Length: 414
Ligand SMILES: Nc1ncnc2c1ncn2[C@@H]1O[C@H](COP(=O)(O)OP(=O)(O)OP(=O)(O)O)[C@@H](O)[C@H]1O
Ligand SMILES: [Mg+2]
Image (cartoon, rainbow, N blue to C red):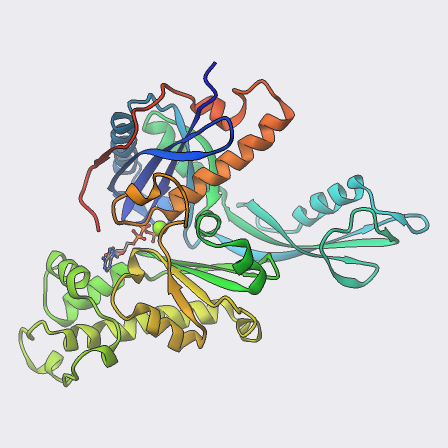
């Protein structure tokens, strides 16, 4: 049996669905062998609001991926996003004893179970549990408590929960399209896996993914995930503002934004803003474009900052802000972000060294790449337990080997 295995991942973005087929060889090396994308329809705020057209879009994208990879795809792993997601903290206490003794794996497992068993609405399902820190006999900041002699173990964790109905709807849409929902991951956590380095997580970093209709964010400090959140605005709001402000139709506004979008007035010649109100059809100049876009982009970053809330922690983020997502591509976005957060910022759209990634067309592939890396890690863990090879996600996804580097785009992007 061949040792190469395939992972299929699909990013359901609010504007675009993006699928990837990645080959993983016996040594765990990745190679992205095919990609495809299609417009997102019937999909809003992370949910398939119109099951018919949503399923059709899934089918179009995955069929294009099958053609590009010459692979028969049975199922794939996918992202979860939207305002139904909640980030919250949970604390679990486990008494050790009767007297002090070394903490065992069974105690750790008990802490992991208890940290999940918090009171929450029936409709919510836990999607991710990330340990923040352990407190052992009131000593904080313990990274690995296993083996420490103690009377009490406390685990603090960050949880992300999502609506069961939305999750079921997504599975239903995938099923309707003729595929198997294989695994799910929170959108911003997948993007973080693809884009952030361990050093950045240790120094403290915020990843902000400005998408089409959503801006998702996550903060890491001391190597641990601290908080996640989302605000319901993104690049599509910039387009709508331009259309409204400059009296353009949506397509024209999108073109102006992509070709000459600038979100910082200080980067362009000063133009009196009153022209926007006085002229029936104001001339499209960089000055007016910036006058329209700057307040919206500033609002998005300000809302992210407020959503995070913990301003004291912001100064601890020594690695600053990493910006990603199509909505962050206008000129001046990084500078504006630095002004709002008072932190250094940088743009990043692909991981540094993933073979095949550099051949992807412009667009937001980080989420799909992160989903792939997550599925591979999960399968490696399964394979460790069961060395039969074809177990777990990869086993289910295994198809014919694709011919390399073929790609189909259903709709031009970027
Ligand atoms: N070159 C560009 N310049 C400016 N804006 C761009 C550019 N390319 C894409 N965008 C904008 O990026 C947004 C889409 O971003 P992205 O592809 O990251 O979103 P998505 O993943 O589909 O959605 P979400 O992450 O919100 O679910 C759109 O508003 C689009 O207009
Ligand atoms: Mg996205």
